Structure formats: C-alpha cells, structure tokens
Image (cartoon, rainbow, N blue to C red; front, top):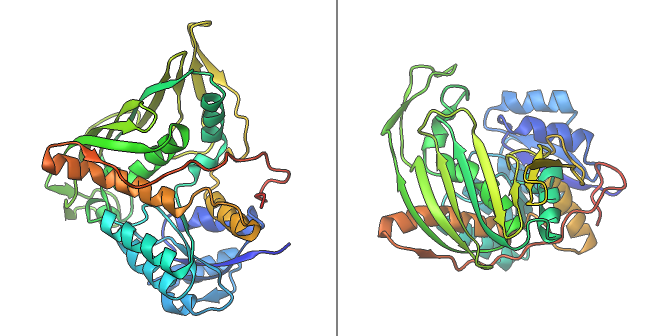
Length: 369
C-alpha cells in the first residue's frame, strides 16, 4: 500500500495517542521521524514506536525530502511558528488545535498556504468519529426536524490539579475557549452549519492560578487570557444558541451539548470523544432513547483526520478537517473576546462549507480516497 510519510514536531502529552494510532491503526500513514526540544522525549518515542529518524531541529524535518506532511503537535502558542516554517519549506501541515493563537495568525497561515499551493489540515478530528457522524446523520435525515437552536457548555476548574505542565493553558493561545472550544465549535458547524455572528461577554476571574500537580506543585501562574466566556451564536440557517466555557468553577460534569429541533432534541456526547452515547427525545415516546452508533471509530482515534487528509490528497477530493474549517473555528473562537471588548455583536465573515460525511470503512484504519 502506498503511504504518506509524515514527521511529528512536538512529542508531548498528546503525541502518545497519535503515535499509537499512526503506527498501529492508520495504514496510509508512515511516521518517518520525530523532533522535540527535549531530545529524550524523541528518543523514547523512537524506541517505543520504531521510528526511523530523530531530527535535531524542526528545520531538519522540513528539509527531509521523504516527508510530505509535517504534523504539528507543539503547544498552542507555538503552532504559528512551526506551521509557517513548514509551509515556507514547501510542506503540507496537519496541526493540533487551534490553527493559531489569534485570528491574525490564522489569516497569515491560510494566505501563505494558498500562495504556496499547500494544504493545512488539523484537529480536532473527533467529529469524524462514530458519535458525531451518527449525530450528523440523525440531523440530516430529519430526526429532530429543522434545527432551531443549541446549548453547549464546557465547565471545569482548570487543569492545574492534574496536568504535569499546565501553565500554557493560561498564556497566549490558551484559555477554555481556545483549548476546548475547537471540539464544540467544530462539532457545531459540522452538525448545523456556518456561524454568522457572535455576541459575548468574557472575563478573567482569577489573575493567578496555583499549580497543585507534580512536578510544578506550588507554582503561581499569571493568567493572560479570559477564563469565563459566555456567548450567543447566530447560524446561517437561522438557528440560535449559547456556548459557555470556563476554567473557573467547581462542577461535576464537564461537558453538555444539546441541539433543539422543531420535532425533537438531540443530546450530543462530549465532542472531545469519538464514541460516547447519543440520546434522542421525540414526542412519540416522550423519553430519551439511546441511539445506536452507525459509523466507525468509537475508540480514541486521534490521527483519523490526518489519515483522511492523506487519502484526500492522494485521491483528489476535499479534506474533511480542512483549513477553511480550521480558520472559521478560530475566527469564531476569537470573536468572543472581540465582541466582549466592543460590547456589541461581532459579524463573522470567514467562509465555511460542510464536507461529505464519513463512509463506512471496508477496513478499519484505511480511509477511502
């Protein structure tokens, strides 16, 4: 089988599931090399997953003629520099979320990719999994009638009690909207369509956060970003909804996502996951019914979006997790603060069109061209 050769930049916490899936499940991808500022991390990944090369710098990976796609798994505030460097070197890029730490960074990357004739794909790819693809089919097939609205919440106290190095969540490119918002908004636009406007209020509830996880327990972190964000979204199709994300409150259940239709209501599972239960309420039953998952990839299948990107590029079809989607989601996420700052509605001008839904796999791990 012809494979697409990739190099991974950044071997941090999220890289483990990528390497596991890309080396064992997604057969169209071949990881030829890894690179990290901490060489020991790259060496451990090389030994565990049988990777051929360790690059001393990301520029060595960019210069490798074998490599077709650079996989950017660095921290959010580093995404821009890595993706820009890869594009300038003539490489396609698949990036962890978000596309950039600001709308301006996203715009520059999209313009550069277009100028170079290159593609950017990126996370989250959870919307390609069994749960969200089943939700899309239920909505598209009319199980809740016309979509009227939605309500989505990601509520937690932050990551400093469990993450080994959580400071970046409170720095430029962090915060609950840019960290978790990509899952909710990517799911939303794939289920309901393009966002046309945002009205929001945001705040930073605590100026500093105390890390209690090891190895940095006792460290105080200055908070540079909003950590309590609430807003109203208007959609092209007329639907209206609320999104609320916060790192500030004590709460037991982290995720909630409901979509309301003229004939029923759908409980969408946590969009950070691939295969959690879906519940449908219709007037005929008057009670919640769990819906069967009708698509593949119920387990943690991070890397599915990269496999889809590689297959799309080989087959000449559109990439599902494409750069238009990445930028539209970034534009909407950054619009919350823009709206709050000016105390008015923020119009969304970035384009977005839903791509074709997933098809049932003939073989798990191989995405159709």
